[in-house]
Length: 386
Image 1 (cartoon, rainbow, N blue to C red):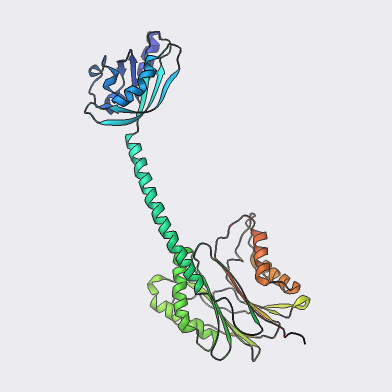
Image 2: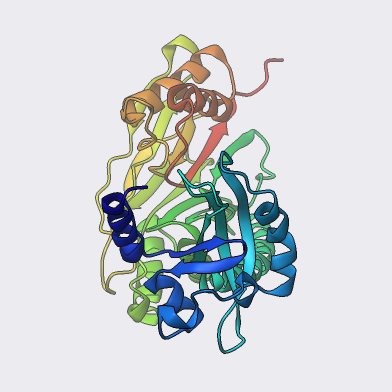
């Protein structure tokens, strides 16, 4: 290496952020400023001609020694790995070390390049410990959410023990727990009441909101009219949980089989659908009703909407999770596709819930849902022919 080239090389080495040591016959010939700073030496004069073992921990010297002793002028990289270096004050550092032969030398001169990774390894160890703690907490959280899921599903009804009435349900929370809630029961006067609510948001917060809604609904559901159900529920939630800003949509519907009358009230929720008749003659109508979100402020009123309801008719309640389901083309499933799926089931005598589920899956493909979805249907069966 010429004098000019040697000077340029020395300048580059001196500016390098990694530690660089040049050695010959296991004696230090040169160390750059990064090496001196890392290992606690004040000047180059203190280290020149020192034994290389001065820098190396005994175990590391035993590892590196073979590559030093087998050095030949045409060797390329002789060693790469982690070694322990010893500072002047005795502290031991972890370092990534590269040992390479110096070009154009015949005397066995080689270069050691190292990077102090002590801090990095400490951070990695801390990160690993933190990760283990997070995994433990995640396992506990998952167990808690699984228990919450089980509890949430236990409070949801599955069927009505009413002759001639068939219920269908799809309950699809976005995660282990969801923000949708439904209920149906037989009232003291024999009427059938259905209820569906959709809390804003997703996950645990929305699921907690459903617990509040369920608790307050148990008191409100005995009201005579559906409008009174929603008004009473709204007043209770808005007054008792004002600081929580617990907003939700809801629909309440009541079927009087003895009179053939359906009434419902809607608060910010997709209006129920009614199918009259069956097969090719089936007709659909929307139970139009307007009402504000619930939970915002007490004193809000709602309106009842009334419709005939005869044998062979069906009532369909649903949250907006199906309507807003998207596909790979970013299209929404929409209201029309939902009605078409239910109509297909009615005309072909198939399960409405199964057909709706099939159509949703075919439409969305690999696109996961981004909202909870609940569907509740009441079918009033035709009397069996004798």
